[in-house]
Structures are given as C-alpha cells and as structure tokens.
Length: 155
Image 1 (cartoon, helix red, strand yellow):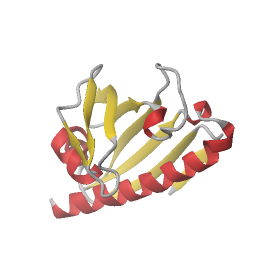
Image 2 (image 1 turned 60 degrees about the horizontal axis):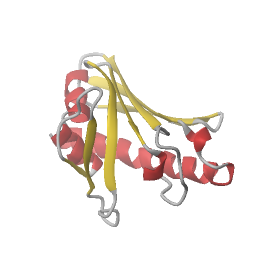
Image 3 (image 1 turned 30 degrees about the vertical axis):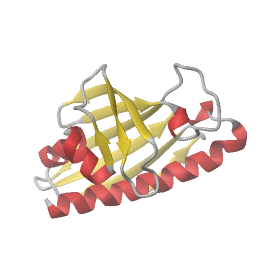
Image 4 (image 1 turned 45 degrees about the horizontal axis):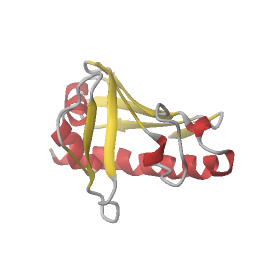
C-alpha cells in the first residue's frame, strides 16, 4: 500500500515474512542493506555520522550514496537523511537541505513484520518537479519493498 500526503511525503507499507529482529538486521547492517538496496556502503550506519558508498543498481553505478543516520531505535525505528540533489541533481539546493527516510517496524505475531517506509521533505523540490520526483520515489520504494521481501525470503 502506498500513500502520498500533502506533496511532502510518501508512505509505503509492506508485510514481510520475517520476525522483527531479522528485518531490523536487514535494514541496519550496512552489508545486508547494501545487498537488497543495491548499494556498496563504505561502513556501518552510526547515529549522527555520514555513510558513503556507491549505488550498484544497474544503470545507476555512477551515483554516490551519502546519508546521515538520524535515529536507530533498536528493532523499532531506523531513520536516515540524504540530500535532495541525490534525487534531483539538476537543481541547486542549500547545503542543509535533506530528505528524510524512516523505516518503522511492527511485529505481526512472532514471524511477520509490518514495515512502514516513509520519505518526507518533498516541499523543498521546485513545484514544477515535485510531482514527478514523488512519483519516481514512490516507484523506487515499491521496488525496494519488493527487494527486501525477496532478500528476506532467500536468507
């Protein structure tokens, strides 16, 4: 399920066939995150620190990954931010402009997890590009939701 709210955030909810602890590890261990997200990260996610790497998704290998880990509430909430220029490299943004991605986990019994992925901060994109950027990001999170589900099914 996907929703778009007030042109500032998108939300996708997916139910995964894995316990919360397993989903948490797939999200927050940088090697596992890289495997399903298709990014090679140089180091772990650490609150308050920058994580760098390169996208390994075919056709996007030239793109650099730069994020700041904002929150890691064990097995509940993982939040990072990244610059809007990662999504829209053709527009100049202020140095402190960031888009925020949240992964919220909720147990559904012992062996399933509801993962809510929220991306916000779209109002800082030019109005002429906002709807297209949001559509592209929503499609991207749909692909990533499928990627993590398939990754967890294999591991």
